[in-house]
Amino acid sequence: MMVEDLESWEGFDKLVQYFSNEYDCEVFSKVDGPDARLWEIGIKGQIVNLVHDDMLGNFFYSKNASAEPLLESLASKLEKRIEENRD
Image 1 (cartoon, rainbow, N blue to C red):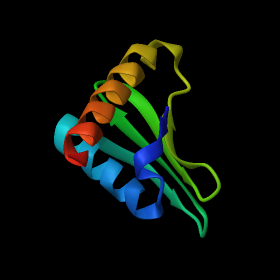
Image 2: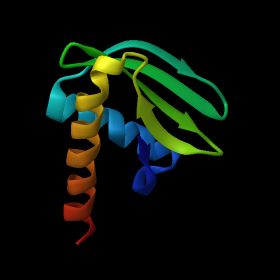
Image 3: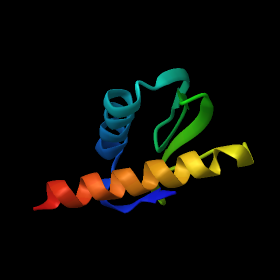
């Protein structure tokens, strides 16, 4: 799921803060490079990969197909939150 309004490196930190505040996520691993980041976080019993890439922006995904409903819910709620804060 792409996060178009939070594309920057700093936007990644905002996403982590959002997931932490809203879903009490647990960070399992962090890889921070000069132009990319990959954090593995746990939300509601699922592993979610949160990625920042300088060329692509921020996005999240899971390697587990059973996480698809969770990802769709996260994306929907995040989109709604961004819209509310845009005003």
